[in-house]
Image 1: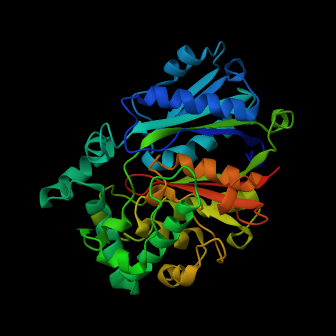
Image 2: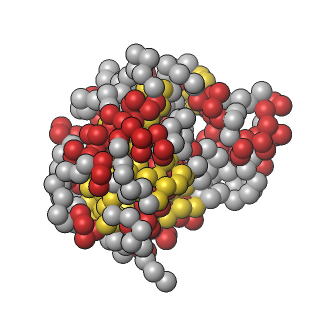
Length: 386
């Protein structure tokens, strides 16, 4: 079987300022800004781009919008990865396949949203086809927002394994501290465990500070063939292992036999095997954090600890810069901005380049980034210095 290991590299990253209000700018305008920054970062021009992958949710922007506005003359491949928050990391795998097969040399990925000033998440998710089953089972009881869908997962974990809200608070506090070190993060006021515990309940057991932000902004990534990447401006960040996994049926979370196991549990063994590394080799992890519980659950499904051991694993600053596994060094969706996880990809690349500033993990050589889809889809990419 053909492997994608080290056949592709991330060669360019770019992002806009992350804000509450983009001042009337469209998702397309934001994505064009991010794309031009990523091109400049890689030392490329729009004429070099021959592939586009649009992660979902990317707003109303399609590949043709980028072709027209950037002046891309010879697009050979375009597609989308409609997996919600799992889409950006799935797009990395798709782009890697395109360059490894020889179809493309340089693939552009962009994601932009006006999630705060424009259409809010609660409205968007009602338009997604996978929520038809949610409409059958959860909606009649009043569950209409993301926190209401994932709260039963967190509560089930607590009942089975004794996980506590204070343990979830460890994740929120750590990522907020990391955001304070980041010059492009929305939430930079310090918080404590007590602040978390005093924040209002959104959907039991998830409190306000367990929840990610609505944000405006955009991120762009360029994936190049590994050999082509040797000649570009930045050091290569190789895509060593990638995989995608989907949760057990049915789509309705509350109807699954095991609500505490995500699609990532299926993807992780494949990605680690492709990369030829284990969880013990990971220096830094950027883990999709729509809610604090989802971080904890992914740590278990990735194999950093056993199922039910996530609460103990995150205690005592374990996820901080000096801890056993630095996580979400940019502040994540919880405190930097909600860019559907595309900002996680950009942060991992910067960490492995040594460009993360005050949040830099010392001697970071191997890292991973995850994506989490709307009802449990899981994606994983392991990257190394090239």
